[in-house]
Length: 176
Ligand SMILES: [Zn+2]
Image (cartoon, rainbow, N blue to C red; front, side):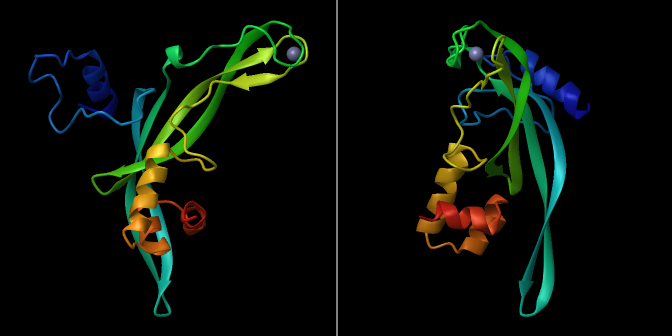
């Protein structure tokens, strides 16, 4: 069973009382991003390079990429332009990738296809908001809180960056 077959089988499964419908090697758990609706899964690799004692070292991590969208009921989709009042129409998607909390030692990302609405008159665009996005960075609120917790527990910028997959500068900005 490949990833897309397994994902399809999970999406079609009825988890209320029907045991054995999750494919072998897979788990179904709440992501904590309540409004996220998953439609796909892929994997990538991230290499982190750093210096220690004059030596250039490298670690590699698997990156789990959860693709999907935001639940439609979370958005009051605009039918009128907030600038000029003309009708708004759906106009493609506005993709955004947010880093999420690592899982099982692997980094995680949510690749989200947001709906984009565009004004028929002035061209003003409004994108579907992502309620679980953290403030100021391309990360989930959950990862922001997790990173803050790592630092509060005495973790260094470097160790928090290595655990979460974030850049050291992003970790530094969260550490305020
Ligand atoms: Zn307009």
